[in-house]
Image: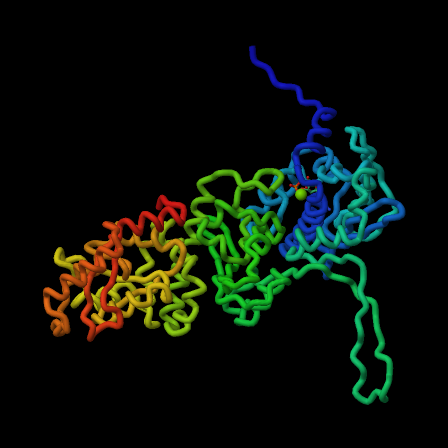
Length: 559
Ligand code: ADP
Ligand code: MG
């Protein structure tokens, strides 16, 4: 037998209310998104000549009426006729936004229309016991008034109460949701979700002080006026072409995004792609410092300028989680409640695009100004090194921008390093031996003795260095890392003329023996140094592999 499941609206309403959106606070985002869509649709229709009305400078207004327990959301968009209310509102899960984009496929694809699932409107019932819509279409038809108390019954009537074009949504806030009537709560929500939405949003007024005329006598009180309090910046930096932005614009946008961050970012990466997916955004490399709040100031994900979430795991590769900034893409597949990512091939593409952009930016930066790049290396190395370990594509490009600093302040690219050390740091099997220290103070005497022999000693002091070394050794031919205090250093082919020792061979042997006996540990090797060439008479080394095992354990092992 075949049949169709009978879904009755009575059953669906409470479900929407309870489970569809886990987060009640998003009702305001959804209603402002609809108001924005209505405005953008009108903009589009006037621009193509289909709506013959004045577009003007529309805004959206949010009003809280605590006394009567109401919130009003008023727009000056295209409005709805009675027929349209029936079609778009009374049909749950029918998206007028999708229909619009389908109808105006070619011309409206960049219009920034937000709606998607045809469910956003009903999120109003998560906080309201009754919802009213009063709407007047841009078409020459009477205004309409729709009222619904959350049951499947509604009333829809003509009204003369509204003469201006647009829609007003009135929420009668339920007893259990009165917190949303608080001005501070509304301001908090507007700042979180709507800060960069494309239509100006007014919430209350503020006092604006007019400048004094130049010839005003001393002590004149300046005049003030009440102006709209607009809570959003409708054209955030990421929506503007990079060629139109100055370095200051990028920095001030950073501070707009993270008002509590006082440190300047090191540099930014402007993302902009429209094929095979749409994505814009700006990523910043923050300066690593104690006041870096990794937990709080995270990368923010937007969809058409509506804040979605700052949980960007999966979209942004792990190694870039330390960065800051915004990503905006209408193509990121999110579920209805828009806070969870749906696993999807597109997401992988986005992640690898971002990785590639960051690699390209590094190449550009080092080529533009090597000195400046070297200065920033200490702040960015953790991100780059982590990227080299975790993303093969990034690793493949890293020879062009990964620096290997020495203990005496030089910075080599990989091939520069190879060139430099080839003549004297090659072992008997023909491997390049790359000497490094992990702590300049603790390993000071080893570093010194390496340098005295003419070796370059790298300073690799990030916590993930053991993994980085493993990655480099397994990917590059004929190289071998050795920490300065490792026994490996003994195998280096020395091209230097031997210095005449003050001790003869028998004296050396007996000194060596004495030291070995006093250490009394098979794990260490004692090597006598020539007193002339080093301030340490002998060095005690440990096999490289043993030390590495310990390091790996300390940083969580694995690879
Ligand atoms: P969508 O995903 O399409 O935004 P919603 O449930 O949020 O779905 O809204 C359903 C439809 O109702 C919208 O697509 C739109 O056609 C209509 N609508 C909702 N709010 C407004 C408004 N303020 N002005 C005009 N039309 C609106
Ligand atoms: Mg919507």
